[in-house]
Length: 74
Image (cartoon, helix red, strand yellow):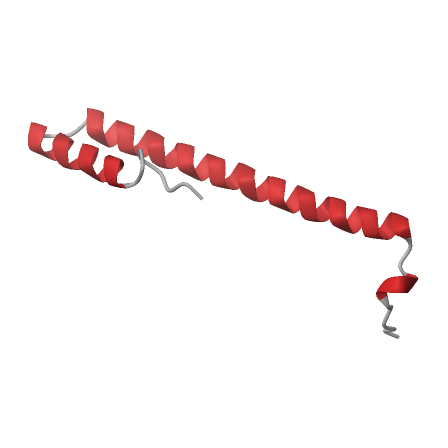
């Protein structure tokens, strides 16, 4: 049986927990974003150092510069 609960009937503790989960969700997003940026930076740095020709290295450096220093900043 499913019942609807109005916001006024939810205890203060429950609301705080829900808000805490929201903050943890934002923290999780920030951590995932940071890891993704670092992964992209490492991959680009590796590609630059292993570039077959100086022209390819210069192209990769230009790509990195266009992306505000390697990865996307969100």
